Image 1 (spheres, rainbow, N blue to C red):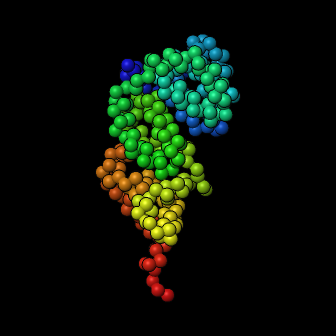
Image 2: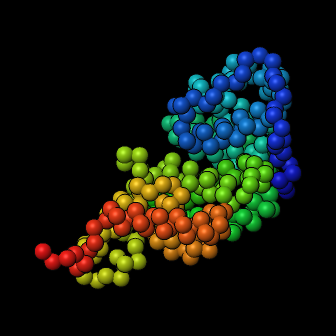
Image 3: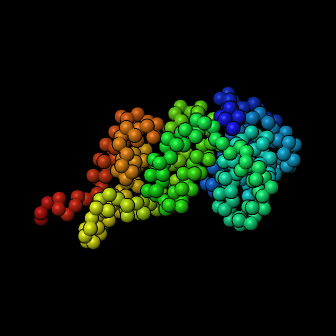
Length: 302
């Protein structure tokens, strides 16, 4: 069984100085799915004390190619290369493979190419190294339903399930980072949010809520077609306004108003004090009241 102690422990002290040129940043063209596994792999390398030359000798890949891989340059890497790197850096291979596979589709690789890259190693992966740390499993079970509720506000069913699954794979890959963070729940929420938002359609930089309008409680309770249309219009107007909120306020309003969670549950899920949730809700409501006109029945007569 894989335990958290088998993953590379992160030393909070600065990484030792390396001879040679410093590894450059991840290139801007790298997609979100590719970045999801590349970032933790880079982090482990940068804290490992290994030089590119040393790692190059161990994985039998030229230093220039290794540098390109760790910056996301060039062609999308084949699985056997990523696997050899993960073995040297002691990264959990099963979540890494699933993230690598998803990113391969994002990189426009065919299913045949993906299968040919990994056919010799996947059988071994499916029979070993597939159990996450116990505390990760417990956390997964604790928050999965709420994570799914949040994701479905923005995504269709398939994308929702994929985003939540990838979130827990990323957390498995970065579990020691999560445990070492000030609050594991907050760390995990940031991973979920980034994963969901990377898949969410945006308009003018703001997430779109359109699909959620068809699943509101108010809408489901209306039988009259005209009333449903009016409620739908109001819902879309509300979602458009919510999308303009700062991130923390947006998340609080989605969880409270659209997911139906009580404030104390939102506090626990986000890893923030209850007072912070209440403050975010208060400021969000003040903004929404200032930008959404009252219903026709509440408007003063001319």
